[in-house]
Image (cartoon, rainbow, N blue to C red; front, side, top):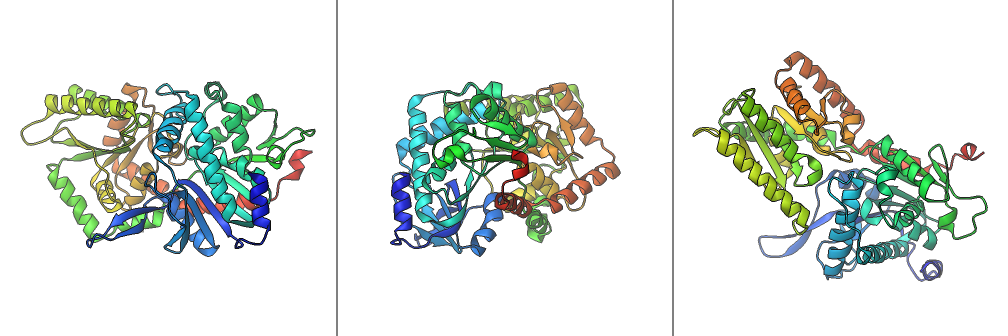
Length: 491
């Protein structure tokens, strides 16, 4: 692969290529159908696109990823001043690489084995094949000396493959989910191959310092690299390709949100009116509690419902005075574990509402939908208490969005200490979701908190988010990637 790509790149037959390339499982666009039936592309919502799009527009950037339709091959195209390089995936790829190895092997393994990961060689073989396809597509369009930023756990082999094919590139990788401890990571039959794949990057970024530390500990234990500070260094006597000789640096770069955009939307009169309407439709309770999650077993939705149900049974919370709105966006519905979780959550909601509902009011308003950002901001504004009770989470941007939306200093966040956000939003009410009694106490503490105290806490958290928004995240990572290797650490 590498010889072919280098010859092609250096032959002069191809255009110079792009100076900055993002590689992700999905392109940052969705295909939409207009009123006239014509198909077009619309930029996807999300913090990653918001953070990186300005950099791409300023630096002749391209985005490499799958466009969302299995079995269809598209030529490169442009949308909103960003060049898009589609990588085709067929139904087998989605079954083996995406739903299989990525989401039934890596996802549960990296989230502390909340459910058992599955290890299948056919999944691993397809994961390798798809990663190679992404690397080849990237190597073909990268200019000499370009910066390439690879995103997330679906593409952990791409850095090494790129390093082998194009040693002239500056390669970064960002892991959006947690990275497991060596004891958990040891279960993966292909642990060394994954680590060597990541070590092809100049900088590997993580959400938390603990994740970067876990990665370096795994490098020390399961590869022949030496770890010095934040560096994973190959053996001095190593003879091999450029990837095996590459020195990799691991750092924490916690992702954030577009704080300014969220605050501006929170001041939109239509959204503010919608927030009041939501409270009225809920029966104008004194307190609205809100949970917003993908329907995923890592989010602690069942633990949250159990704690809330016990507060109702204990008489600490009364239906009519309080209402819990639980938004559970559909997620990976073809995966059996997620189908089981959906059934379990819906059964719990039905039981709790059956026990506690009145003719006028409901205990839990359960919404198994995805909502546009404007409706989400209205929900944040309508809520008094946000419940984020993840059992394990890389960051959890919902927690940050809730805080940023409450520009009037109202509201309070109950936040799991097992989220990346807990490292930054330290003025929230931190809870251990495995401790149901402790979570109940945390919810009551938020409910009964003095308004002066809660306002002070929300103010401090919003100040942090203004200073550390998603744009500063991308700038900090790319600035680190551009830095020369700290040679003094090698001595």
